[in-house]
Length: 128
Image 1 (spheres, rainbow, N blue to C red):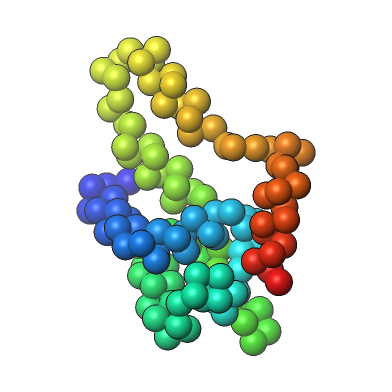
Image 2 (image 1 turned 90 degrees about the vertical axis):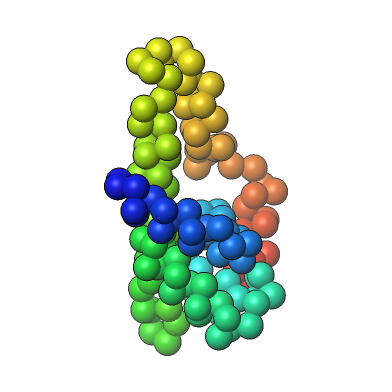
């Protein structure tokens, strides 16, 4: 990832609604959510949400896919990986032991078998 692309990503996430959208979509991987559900979950008018989704799409953070009459949005996990890699590319001056805690914090919060019923219930509540 080049600096210009990283700046575009950070600019897209430097707004509270867009950051909330991105975090919501990360929580709903791999299925994603339709635009209307995202707007309802975050209590944002549909036209305003459309603008936020467009900015996140242009930044390469999310993808859109039409399914029947709905447009489903999904987080691009490869973009998350690229941004994290960009941030730590020159980490620690060749001393990996300094970076170990950072790398551990980047590990997924749970595996598919380990997710709690609370997380599952939260995802189901948003799906309605």
